[in-house]
Length: 249
Image 1 (cartoon, rainbow, N blue to C red):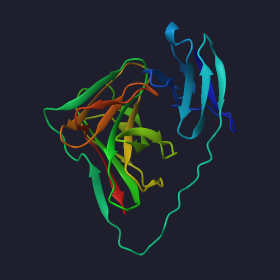
Image 2 (image 1 turned 90 degrees about the vertical axis):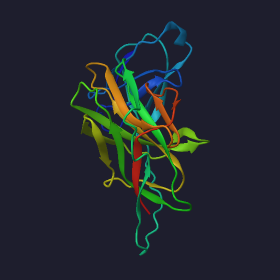
Image 3 (image 1 turned 120 degrees about the vertical axis):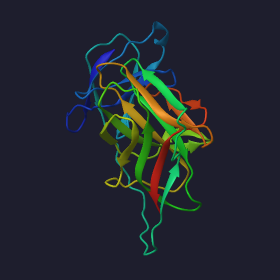
């Protein structure tokens, strides 16, 4: 199956949409021109291909041998959450995994021009609404590219595993891919959360060759999950990846 994704209001191409069969670990993403191509086994003929993007309504298409489809996506009306303004002095805190074990890492390869996403459970201070200002993650050596697009997603904490998305902003930045801590600055965004959540770090392919990721990790710091395909099934990792958030409350 192949096609082009366009915005229903502007007719502009929609880049980096997640395309796949939910929980079947088979997917891809649309490229910078909004185009996609995916090969699916015959056994998937009774399933639907889901096209999902954080700022657009999801679309489902019956799986069949279709080429050069043009698919329009409708933007979601983004409803901003209520923010209470006070004169109380703000506190800043870093929550999550702030270190790494030099002898431990989580590695994975995306070999079908698809995403790699790591997710870490974040527990916020009791009865607080926090503003997420930064997301940080640690990368190890072993990269063959000098930059990559990174998208940050936020998920509901569903009984200790990532649930549905809860922040509908397309938070994506291009970053140097090299050893060390990588910072995603969210201060231009208004990300306010008042309950425990999962933060996801999504590495988007360059559409030229498989992407191999080595992320720092530690065994004793809570719950971490990973998936290597768009809309694929989350798999629990032993321990958690080196991902943390800087919050203000």
